[in-house]
Length: 203
Image (cartoon, rainbow, N blue to C red; front, side, top):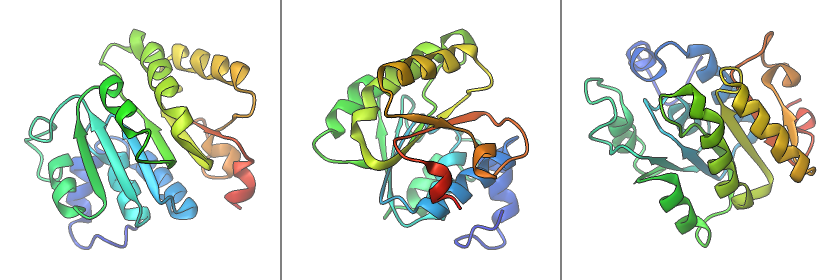
């Protein structure tokens, strides 16, 4: 992946932020680069991989929400969310707290073009419940041409069940995967939800 805002630090940034997921970072970066969202929301910043892909892929604002503070998120790494907040100070707004407490405060401030959901515990059995919570909190904040990216689709059957139920009750939302967009040769770990044909936009 080539991220224009990075130079010779890229190898180290990869190691710290992307960990075992450089392929996903490439996909998220390419997606954001094409869509050029003005406002993004990330629920679950973790080590900062997807946030970094967003911030390098566009000039849009990203609101990142995490239960842990910047000082608590991977302090042993050089390139971590705290570094992101300083490096992209004009783009990255970090909010410390639970999604239940933070997201309702955003309703009168933002309409998001891009939402990334990954705010769950380390217990895979709870992934579905966490996605259901966060999807319910944020889908009404998404613009008409906005996109919701849901992580851990292929790791937890519960996440797929939640997405199917959401589509049943909200039939205007359509599910896509990166391979549907010609951006991956195999099943990736994310599902994409949009109210339009994302394939046409990504051509």
